[in-house]
Length: 171
Image (cartoon, rainbow, N blue to C red; front, side, top):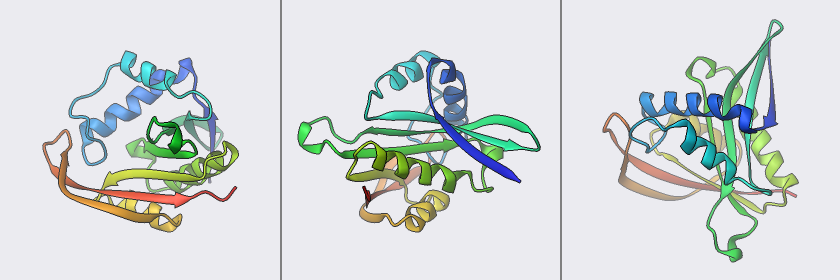
């Protein structure tokens, strides 16, 4: 049986965050970055997540072996003060850890953290053809509030429609 946990990311986690993200960039289908990102850019991204925003590392343990399998973030939705309490969510799970409940664990953890951090609404933007992420949004009660056809390319030069989702946070 696999058990999941998470921790707030720190400087020691920049490598795992970079590796998991770059795996997603190369694979295509989940990010609009077209080439892998450098460690320093991920470090700067991590440092911009000041309270109440945060980045978390997702860990899986199976048969006594623990490993970091992904990361998730609660980020600024829009930098004007009227949007305080509204955040943007993102998560990336290593390819070999998908399909075993890690995404659902991560979404639940993000929503719990949003509530604990005083957020009132969480939003996310995903490729409309990303069935796993779309399914998670639906499962966790998100509402799709927008759809933009032929909006963004991934690293494989595939053009994707974007879907925009939100959920109200129970505090």
